[in-house]
Structure formats: C-alpha cells, structure tokens
Length: 427
Image (cartoon, rainbow, N blue to C red):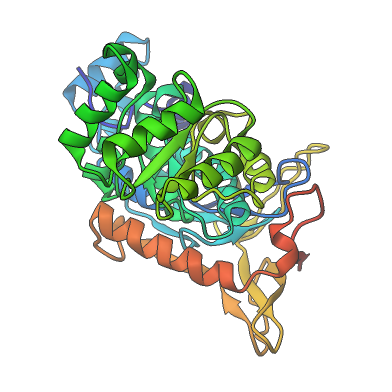
C-alpha cells in the first residue's frame, strides 16, 4: 500500500502535468507564491506553521511502484506522465517566512521557483500542511496571550484525525503551549507530554478515595487528581486526605469554572495545601481563558476549540502562479485577484523595536533603519538549506516565534475583533 505523501494530492495537478508535458510547457521557469488574501474575520494576525513538516514531506515526495500503480488504477495512464512521475525529484528553490513568524493579508509566506510541472505538483502538499498548521498556531497564539504566562496544555487528540492531532500538538507547542497529551507528538517532535486520569478511573473504583490512593501510589503525590466526578468539595477534601498537603494539583473539568476555582483555592488553602495547583479543562477557548484571568487558576487544558474549525478557522492560504519565464502573471478574477511578480517583504519597526508595518513589493525594497527581511532561503536545488531533525526544526521555530512576538504591538493581543495588528503596504 502506498505510504508516502505523493497521493495526498488532487488529481488536477497530475492532469496539468500531463498536458504541459504534451505541449512542451512543462519546463517553463515559473514562480508560485503562497499567501492569504485575508485573515479570518476580526483576527489581527496569523502565524506561519507547518514549514518544518512541509520540508520533511518534500524530501519524501517520490512516486514508487505502488504509487504509480494507484495512479494508473484511477485512469491516469498517459505513458509520458507516468515516466515523468517515476523519475520525479524536486529540483527547484523554495523561500518563505521563517516558521513561527506572523503573517498578514498578501504576505508571501512561501515562494516556489521551479519548472512548471514540478511547481504545480506541490500545490496540495503545500496548502494542506500550511493551512492546517497555521490555523492551529494562530488560534493557539491567541490562547497563549489570554493565559498571561500560565501554562496551556494541548489535549485535542480525541477530537480530530490521528495525524492531524500530532500536527496540532506541534503547532500549538510552536507558539507557546507547554505540553500535549499526545504521545506521538512527544516521540516525533519532543513536545513535553502530560496526563494522569479520566473520570472513568474514578468510576472504576468502589469509591473516590480508593481511586486517588491508586493514582498516588502509581504516580506520586506530585500528580494531578480529578476532583469533580461526584462532589467537588468532598473530592478536594478526599484528595488532600489521601495525598497530603503536598499534592501537586487538582483538575476541574465541569461547572462554573471561575466560581469553582475560587472556592477550590480557598478550600485547598484551609486544608494547608497552599502549593497545590488548580488546572481547569472543559471546552476552553481564548475567550473562556480570558474570563478566568482573575480566578486562581494555574493552568489550562485545551482540546476541541483548538483542533476544530470552530476555534481555529482556516488560514485561507492559496497557491498561485505569479511569474513565468521572468514575466509577471496575475489572476484578475473579481474577489480572487492576485498580484504578479515575485515578492520581497520586510517588517518595519520603530525606534523601540515595535513592528509598525509590513512592506510587500514585486521587486527589491529600499531598506530603512529597523527593517527586518522576512523571506529566508529554505530549499536550493531541491535540497533543504539547513539539515535539521524534526525536533530541532520545531525548537528553532518556537524560538523564532518568541522573538517575533516580542516585537508585535500591544494591540495585537486584544481578543476583540479588529484590524490587523500592523498595516501591510503593497508596493
């Protein structure tokens, strides 16, 4: 059975390659750009994520015998096309925003220069990865901002596709989530993993105390006990009786969380458990997290609202041909127009280092003091410019995001709907 990424694509890419091979245009030098025409309604920024995963996939983008058999079985039997696919190796160049950077409408997030057939074949691969991961990272960044340095835990694996869960954990960690519940994300990318027990474990036992004793015996007093299976007050009292005042944390997963957290803090303190933390879960998003700002909460577990479209609306990126044999080309369709020519992009900053504008231009940009070039080299001649392990790539993206985040203006972190955090100037 095919195992690589080549069939995770759309049929029309192969039919375009077949037609271009037939009429002699397959080798024309082309430039494709990935950008978002607009941000989701009211969002003030987007975050680029998925570049590391894309480079991993590009290195494995090969048509083996089973892949070619699958193509033939779906009616794509053109001999010229199949021969070309059998020998396909990407030979072009890729540039783009560093993973973890911010993007705005029209930002040239990724640029591919290659012969037409090679470039067009990558459209679905690029968009499926960047659109998904950037949507998750953009939503997660809002949650991190709302948490005001209290840790966020990604726990959405049970609400999405199994591989999407791994990618979501990676994207969330990139923008500041402290840990994930997903073991594969820990194995593949080095994201710290965490998790203790569900209500089922409490219900398994004859009483709550027996469940707590079993968990503490297995995991130690530093564990987190889920105290809302029956009665929260009694659950907290039982947790401290079993584990002692050195219990690591309690978890609240239902009810009026601000009220419950405040009461839980008072009760824990009265029992001498002043160092026991309070972790809250239950369909949290950035607005719920913000609503808990005044409550004595020490951490947030986020699942459904992060990994589904309701909380992480699409990044809306598209992949368009903007240059052919050195000549700018553009789509003129109403509402879906593009700007021809390969783009340059810089971010302008004031004297204090705060970002003030993004300048995007078809051609060179005259530099000013405080400018930061946004486009970096990613692939040259089909080979990644930096050989990094998946863990190293994520660590670098996380560090870059922290640096870029520190330069964003304060209004970027407002959760209310508003304009983009900085203006984009198109030249």
